[in-house]
Length: 98
Image 1 (cartoon, rainbow, N blue to C red):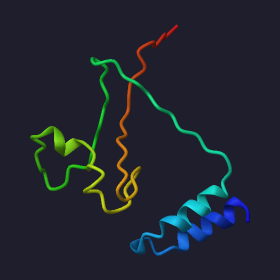
Image 2: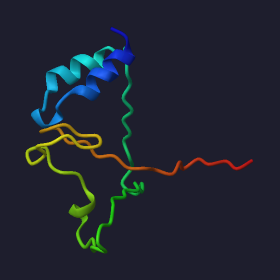
Image 3: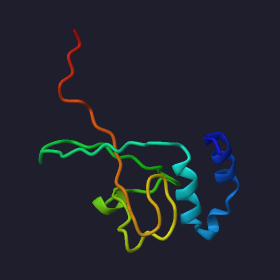
């Protein structure tokens, strides 16, 4: 099976049934993949955003954080059930405009 067929099979899965094993097997068809990990110094700024629906206010850090693994029961942008991933954007520190 090539990756295009794997994508079509992924699209056809009923994700409400959380077919984790099938998803993992199909993703393996894409070949090698990579992971980037950063260790930040304490003063490093990490930008995080989320949709603001109906003019709600964000008053607590937890409202912009990730769902803890034990409370995460569904697939999200970068997380899978019971395995949460925090993601955000950074601005490189060593920008040289010249």
